[in-house]
Length: 78
Image 1 (tube, one colour):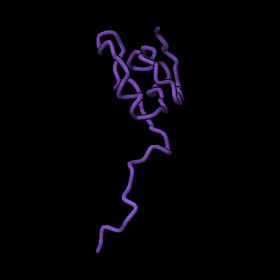
Image 2: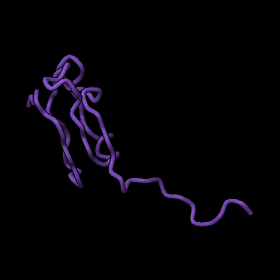
Image 3: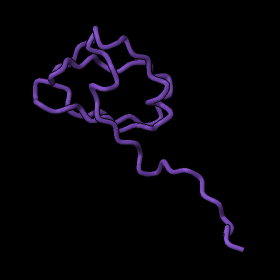
């Protein structure tokens, strides 16, 4: 699927998603579409490549605000 005017995509918990629509460069609106999703989902997406206008560099990603590394519960300074 080709989506030349795509602006924003918000994805939550859709772990079976494999692909996003192709976005040609330069985008029609002059900016990259924003994709807000979990980092694990972004890392598992499949891409056709630069020749098919389907590449991760054609998107600007923001990962969920609740996605954080697990921190130690105890003090490291002892």
